[in-house]
Image 1 (tube, rainbow, N blue to C red):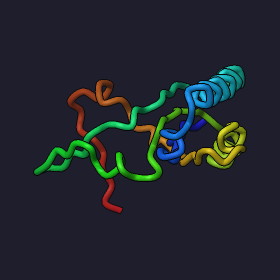
Image 2: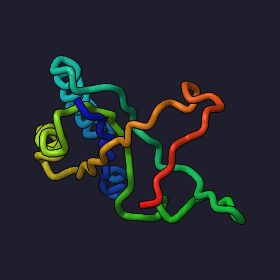
Image 3: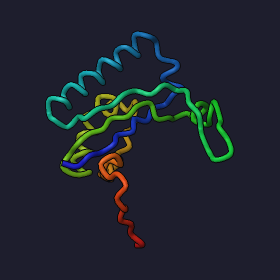
Length: 129
């Protein structure tokens, strides 16, 4: 099995306009979906993200970055395992909020590099391709 990062993208303006009951129902649906993914063996871990943060560059640390005012933002992430990216896409399409067109899931394959702690001081191989 290969590993994939699911980036959950949602319309923040719609979330801000949702009632507490609507938000609770959305969380309940996601919880049911995640439980099914755990049962299937595809779910590794994940979490929601708050709509606050900072952008960091060499010369600047920006509070209230552009994503705060953006209509769409990453609102969560899930690490999954699947046979391939097509299988991962099929899994993402089972998300109730994707089905309801409330969110989009961006799928990114994980490179699978060795944990740096396992490498220690040994020289790392590089490619000049």
